[in-house]
Image: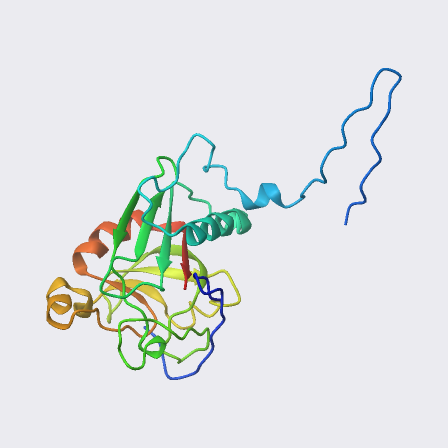
Length: 232
């Protein structure tokens, strides 16, 4: 799935391993006056608009997130219903942006405010290491990032990445996330020192890698039952 100013594209490549119809009714005429014809009802409307996004809440007032990504993320939040029980916040990842810039956004669904962080993409998504992700896949052992909706599945610890956040893919574009061990974790190639030296972040095996300082902020906030929506 690809979402950008250039459109949406599904990628797919296999490299190697990842981180651990309603008819219109005629107007009803009464003895007094004719009632106006009502527009057809969209039966899916309620499923596409999350409860938290009320008309009184302005989402992203500073305009940090491009509008099509924000709109798609909010629709994904509604579309996945009970799979996303915690709706105080959601996370959006814009893989159309260079890895040197913040592109992981935390959207507070109650206040509409946004915080941003840097995150890496998979090396299979950027073989030439330009800093731009161009290829995406759901194939196990592809080293690529996957697009789509994820739900955070809890904080965890492991031998390779001591502290992390587990993820489950909710779309066909990322349904193998758990099998591929796609997680949120810290990595030295996401530290400010690496960015200063190389002008871009290093590449993960498909995980949403961040700096250690950012993981300390994100890990307890993401925890479990929250949406991460990644697009390009």
